[in-house]
Image 1: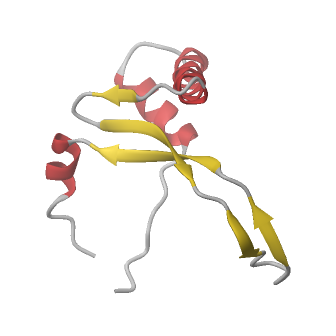
Image 2: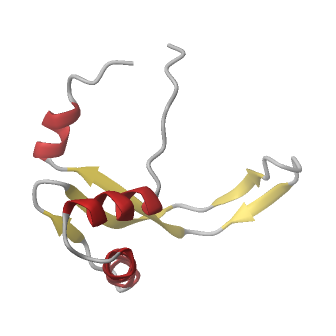
Length: 102
């Protein structure tokens, strides 16, 4: 249960792709940043982003509440309805990680 969760950063992904193909880190960084920007724009425009074999990004509306609590201060606040980004893994991704153990 004390499995240390390792993080993979965008910089590490850029480095790995750079080693795998004949492109500069700067070019790969541009492509990755552009990809994330396109996903963000699509979600803001109310579109669903489907990446076959990987998963789907979408926006869901979360209901607001009259009496929510700020976890930092304990203050009672009102929260209006708002969008949240949600990721649903695709079948292939689910199958790939199915046997990962803690």
